[in-house]
Amino acid sequence: MHDLEFDHIHPNEEQREQLSDAIWSADNVEFTTVGVDVGSSTSHLMFAKVHLQRLSEALSSRFVVVGREIIWKSPILLTPYRPDYTIDADELKVFIDKAYKEAGLERDDIDSGAVILTGEALKRSNARAIADLFAAESGKFVCASAGHNLEALMAAHGSGAVELSRKEHKTFLNIDVGGGTTKFALFHGGKLLDSSAVAVGGRLIAFNDAGELARIEGPAERMAKEAGIELKLGAKLSKSDRQKLVDTMIGVLKDTIARKKPSKLGKDLMLTPALPSKTKIDAVTFSGGVSEFIFKRQKADLGDLGQDMATAFSKALENNEIEYPVYDPGQGIRATVVGASQFTVQVSGNTVHITEPDSLPIRNIPVIRLDISLAGDIEPIKIAEAISKALTRFDIAEGETTIALAFRWEGEPAHPRMFALAQGICDGLPKTVANQDQLILVMEGDIGKSLGVILRKELAVAGDIISLDGIQLQEFDYIDIGELIQPTDVVPLIIKSLLFTSDEAHGEHDHSHDHGHSHDHDHDHSDGKDHGHTHD
Image 1: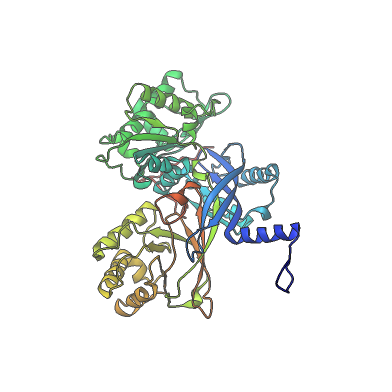
Image 2: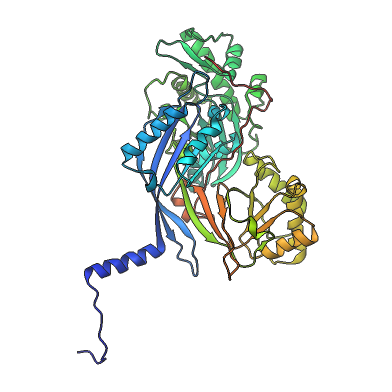
C-alpha cells in the first residue's frame, strides 16, 4: 500500500528500452568509417565500426575510442597505371564502387573516411586529382598525400609497432618495406624518436606475365648499375642478375638498419636524413607489402621483387646479419590504412582570442603539436626549435601551409612566461608572421586570450590570430573550426583523425588515440633529381 497520493508511472518494456537507449546514446557514439590507401604498388580499402565513449571524468564532454571492429576488407589491388604512367582514376573508381557493393554499404552510410596517397603514387602528375576524386564523393573524407617522414610514422602506428613499444617499454625500429620506398620509424615506449626513408622497394621493377621487364624506376637503375647488371624494358632478367640486384637492395637496407655510414649508393638513395646511430634498438618490426612474405601471410608472386626481398631478409635474420629480435606487429600491407578517419567534437574555452571572427569557419587544418614541456622556464629559442622539428616531421615548409600549432600549457600564467612563449612562436613561424598569414594556436591551458593579446598588441603580429584554449589535440589531427557561438563566445571544433588503436585510451597520453594524416606536399629525392621514369 502506498502512503502518497500521486500515481507512480511504471514504464512498459518499449519505454524502458527507449530510456536505456537514450542514456546509452548520451555517452556513446558509433561511426562507420572507410580508409583508402593508393600506394606505389598496391591499393586497398577497409570499412570499420568505431565506438567512442564519454570519459568518466567530472564535467568532461570528451569522447575516447574504446573499440574498433573491421567489418570488411577489400582484396589487394595492384595500383593501376595508364600507358603514360599516370594513375588510372577510372579503374580505381570501379574498384571502390565494387568494394562498397560487396560490403553492402552506400556512400551515405559512411560517417568519415580518409584517402592516403603514398610512395611512388605521389609522383604521378594526377596524384592530387586522385585524392580529389574521392573527396568529391564524400565531404566527410580527409584526402591528402604523405611525405616520407609522415608515412614512416603512419606505418609504425598502423602496423601496431608503436603500441608494441609502449607495452614492452622498449625501443622498436619499424621497417616498412613498400613498393617504391622503405620507411624507418624509431620508437621508445610509444613515443617517436626519429624517422627516415630510402628509395628501396619491392616494385621498383615489375615483370609482365611473360617474365619481361615492364617497369623500371630510377632507383632500380642505379642499384642495377652498382650490381653490374643492365635493366632493359622488354628484356628478361636472369636468375643470377635478379639475385645480384636483390642483394644490392638488401645491402643498402641492412646498412641503414645497422646505422652504418652510408655508401655512395646509400647516400644517393636516401630520401631523408639518416637515423641517429647512438640510440640502442631492442627489437625490429616489419610492415608494408614485403612484410606479408616475411611473416608468411602472402605466398603468391606479384610480378616484382617483393618475395625475393623477403627471402633475403629472412636469410639475413637467420644469419644474424640483422642482430635484433623480430616482432610481428600485427598489420603488414594495410598498416597505413588500418584505421579510417573519425570525427570528434570539442568546444573551446571562453577565454579565446579571435581577431577576425568573419574568417570562421575554416576546415581541414593540419595539427602540429609542440614536443616540449612548458612547465618550467620558457626560452623562445627552444620554442622556435621545437616548431622547426615538428614541421620537419610532417614534411611541411613553414609559411606555405596553414597549420594549427597545438601545445599543453603548464605552470603559472605569469606574463614573462607567456611573453617568452609568444616570442618563440613568432621566431619559429617567421614567414607566417611576415606574410600576415593566419596564425592558429590551440592549447589545453586557459591562456588563449592572454596569449593572443600579447601576440597582437605587444609583438605586433598583424595577421589573423585564432588563439583557442580548453582543447586537447595530438599530431595527425585535422581540425575544422566553426563560427563563434553566442552569447558564450566559444567555438566548436571538429577533430578529424586517423584511428590506429583502440587501446590508447588507456595509455599515458591525454588524448585517447594516436592519429595519422598526411599533407598536400609532393616530395622528390633529397639529391634534387627526378628519379621517376616514364615508360610506355
